[in-house]
Amino acid sequence: LGHEGAAVDSKLAEKGFMEFKGGETAAIERMMGWMFERDMLRVYKNTRNGMLGADYSSKFSSWLACGCLSPRTVYWSCQRYEKQRVSNKSTYWLVFEMLWRDYFRFQAARLQGKLFLPEGEGLVTQNWVEDEEGFQAWAHGRTGWPLVDANMRELRGTGFMSNRGRQNVASFLALDLRIDWRRGASVFEEFLLDYDPASNWGNWAAAAGLTGGRVNRFNITKQARDYDSQGEYVKHWCPELKDVPVHFVHEPWRMPLHVQKAAQCEIGKHYPEPLNTRFKPPEGGREGPGKYAPSRDEPKGKGRGKGDGKGKGKGRGKGGYGEEPLTEPLKAKAKRWSK
Image (cartoon, rainbow, N blue to C red; front, side, top):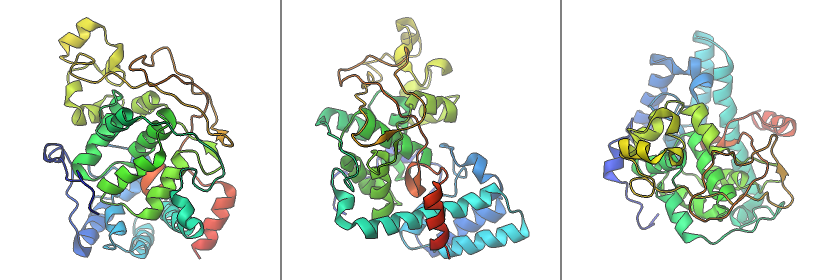
């Protein structure tokens, strides 16, 4: 697309777990291998929120986005799997996510140019902050928040990021740093192998809380503990943290100085000081269920503002920011679209 600096970081690329080879042949090999040979579809519902490895998710998105794999081919292969192997929540969920893919295409057709406006559809209002230093730290994986940094480094190194990772880094940029969500969407457009306009920009608008529903601000530390409990993922992509004790790995700023020195990970020297949150719910948006106020363990690092509030929730969207169930009205629409 002509973006400067879009070249993959070769050192980071070596840490990738699979090669995304173009073409229909490679796409079919991936689908059949993942679905039938390794029988990963059977347990997909339980593994789909993983971040480390080749088979925790289907990873069909790159081939779908490039037209190498038809969504109908995926659907009918899933139907065959259900007849030959098993029909369960995992098979349902894979097809369900294909409906999300369609949903964002219908949304893009409806919104047209509004999809790219700072306020999105205009249902809520948000005042974005100019913070070039914060944006560059986010884009290059130097925020001081290991889960965010690891995901952004994986993106720049491989052109891929897990669904769980996309939810978290988008929430952090748009809701914690309050930086214009479109800048994040542009970075994804630049680096993602599975980029497509509808899914990318639609999901980012949702992550920024601009769709009129609840504001799904993710608790980065809790997400890291839930989905990377031993710190294997963040240590893989952030080698500075490789000797940090597990109970500090997602909050390295909490390490006493003697522990930092023992782990050869001094904050501000070997690993960045954490950026602070400046979260403020968008005007007109509903905050998500449950409180998210900074805990006593959250950092007081570089001065990028303070914030607290509400809004812990689960995101939504194929190829982007979550895969939680649709609301009832959307479920009805999705059912109509699938006919």
